[in-house]
Amino acid sequence: MQATLAELAALVGGQIVGDGQLLISGAATLRDAEPGEISLVDKADKSHLLDSCRAVAVVAPLDFVPPRLAAIQVRDVHAAFAIIVQHFSPPRQSSRIGISPLAAISPTARLGEDVDVYPFASVGDDVTIGAGSTIHSGVHIMAGSQIGENVTIFPNAVLYEQTIVGPRCIIHANAVLGAYGFGYGFANGRHVLSAQLGNVVLGADVEIGAGTTIDRGTYGPTVIGEGTKIDDLVMVAHNCRIGRHNMLCSQVGVAGSTSTGDYVVMAGQVGVRDHVHIGDRSVLGAMAGVVNDVPADSRMIGIPATPERDQKLKQAAFSKLPEMRRQLKQLQRTVDALSKESPAGKVGIETDEPPDETTDGCRAVA
Image (cartoon, rainbow, N blue to C red):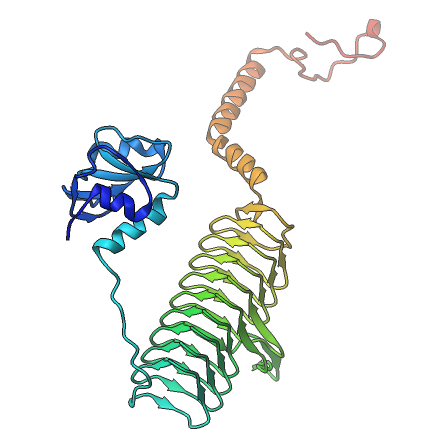
């Protein structure tokens, strides 16, 4: 498939720089682009990356004219480039399959219109699934769960009893929602599992990454707020209340009964202790260890997590420790040398001699 630069510009509503009749055969990133393909550069300060690029044209911001290459200038580079990529490599369209005879569906389950249930999926008693939802192979939806409209659940995800999923949610492969919380009492020399009477509730437009686990509440729900996006391999413990439009990146771990406000961002491998609150719009840097409440609009990094500015000052001081150690050793050698060269009673060296009578009892110093 080929298209002219002008045709692609019309497709994305962009402005042409260079030959509009230039033929384009595909789209790829700067690193992977081959001769005849179009690539993208999203910022003018990345222009040096074009030196080794083999593409014949790029999608670029409105304020940037690439040297040597033809271009399509647009307001949103990534949105435009995504359209061009799909033009050359259209996404595979899956036809609706309906209810597979190889799926195990309880006679008490209620399924809306245009629901797809793939082979070897399992739908338990009293489950409801909203119209337009897709349940892939190997998914297990246990009794009493409620799935909203236009939800997609990818293969081998497991939803324990009473899980509630809002409309338009996406749950990726091998995610587990509603597993028992890690809560134990101690009696008669044994760890005794606490009550597991709650459930998990996802608001609308939530996305749950592959391999992520969200534990059920002890008595009430563990809640994931509307629009929140959770990456792969994240752990959210029992009784947590995650706010709206949060972003939890890969390998984040949130301990039990923690809550967050809205628009919170947790970068990769953040760890949050139990029973703390993260305020609205706060950002936790990668690998931050949160041990106390975080006020709204904070930026926290480090272990334990402290305000970004404080942590950077500490790191700057820490980086100077080797130099400071060398200076201290040099000072020590200087002091030792002075001590050896100075006669007793001078350079601040105390002696056992009686004070000079003419100095009102004060010792003489050199």
